[in-house]
Image (tube, rainbow, N blue to C red; front, side, top):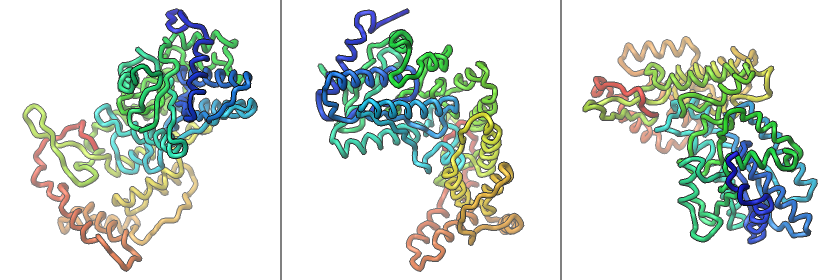
Length: 466
């Protein structure tokens, strides 16, 4: 066993360090908890260190917040484990009189994975267009920290990161180093500091603490061997993300099940091999999302702002691809709802939230879905209607939509143009003051896609971004 910290120190050394820093000032602590081995070790060490202070009669003068970023596309095998653990932590802390509170943080519903992909058509994330990390993880975490900064002026963010684990994590630690100080500067938030209590730990140190101290029990009476079982042969986890430089978590047991930044999802594959066969549809769906981003038939010929952009490759001008088209988005939703229905008898977990469906529905209508197809897809799969009201004044049934499309083609007008013009008009229904409507119409008519004849001969880049 390659011990690093525990080769030269004992458990009381790290408790003493944690206690000294806790008592030093009035800044609240915010612990990033992912459910994985490193964040679990950090959380358990701090819980026990603070409990020692309580038993010694020391005043616990400031709060400790344990937060977990729920992207709403977490691995279904993990998210319930995290939720249960957070509840047990807070219950035990309350029983012991410790100033520890737990909370999950979420992305805004109009910035979730499905709202952006199925609603707006964002293509499956890849390394060069990793649009998910900032919206799903960084923003919710940052907003929580900002809220505490507004109340306390300063805050200490506690991370379960270790030196030498990855180049990206080392960069986070090195870039924020304050010479001669234990705490580091937060990379983007003034008056926020980073504390990494297990930065000198090796992987062996982590498992040594979890499995060989306190009979492998956590301070809230759970068995750390259950966590070890979740890992099996995997030693990766997804940390609390505070920087876009942080490595993607697609190879992790504790990341998003939809991650297409990596080519192969080792998380779902590992769980399936260990006997969780019901996860196979999720893996197949995730692999399908990975592949369809290069399918030109499923992508728009323009960006969402109407611009057709080009890139230079091998001396040729190539046309980039835009977002998923409406047909593709309908297919993605249909498959997702079918899988959600299929796994209902295995786990109490929704793959997509009702709030996301509402946003997707509105985005589709704004994109020209005159027939309002989302409720129809939902009812077809789930056998029950959606009862959400929506302005029906500019929606059309299938016959009307077909007739309008035929008339557009007869008059050599792009049907999408008419759809967008009607959507603009609908935004102003019932208003006497129609400020900016002509400006919006003029902006629409100037978009590149309406002048496609000028550039239609350009080749296509199958890896184009949204």
